[in-house]
Length: 403
Image: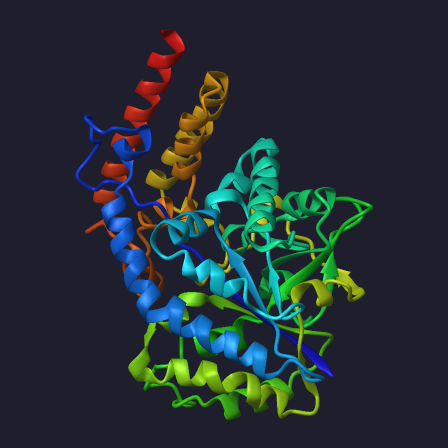
């Protein structure tokens, strides 16, 4: 039977104060970040998505506990965990109520950061292990498979995943690297990268996006999409595995409840398990599969799941993004020299991918996606806000160093 991994990205960023630095804030964090906005967004998405979607998945996991198990995987960011603990700790309790063996947690960079794109990768190594520590603390399970932020990947990131002990690492099955090959197999790093690599697991973009992007599109020739129809499509897939990896907010937030998306999610486990040639699997299970070939993504051909290019341009595609990213890197040495946990934590929150994603200046469909997620009125407003915060933060760091 073909193993199907159903994985969800669960993330909320710490959003910056759009009205500028709060100089009279009680804490360094409050000087830059807006918890009123964070709470508003988190509670709204919790009502629309987190609670109803997780309840449906939990019911399915309990219903199918015997021979034909339902299994699910979550890639949960550190910033989501912090906000869940603050605003809705019962969400963490719900995730801990899944029957043993039916849920797997995927590792990622701390605070969903862009540290994997730094020239020096030591901070990235620390962040990956810090996130794993948090997941183990909250859920009693240490991730065996990881994904870098937004599935950003190149050979060096894969090498680090192997060196840090992961069985596998997820990324996008991009055609420019796969060529004629299928994303429904495990691959590995080339020998010149490392002789002791780890399995590379690839997201099936088309079948994932049929749900994530096209579910409620009335112009789509396959609209409306039912769980029965979708399970039949999955049954036609050939390969060693089928990896479906999507934003959790697909269910009830990006596609509202009125589209039928939550009914689709509720019916999907049963419809998949009705297929004699399909079974659900955890990412740790499929990471044990033998690799069938090499996946060679050199640094200047970085892969991600974002936009049509599926590269790093969603975060580093214009001069504003590149300038701010370089400034974030430059601050690392000074912040670490300070040896102050509050400053380190704030700096790491600045590295969250969302900030640079919001100031992309792409057009057409990609531009619409960036604008949808952004809380800035315009990318240039976002650039001004982030710049003000970073410059003030640098001033505070230098003042502490010189005191």
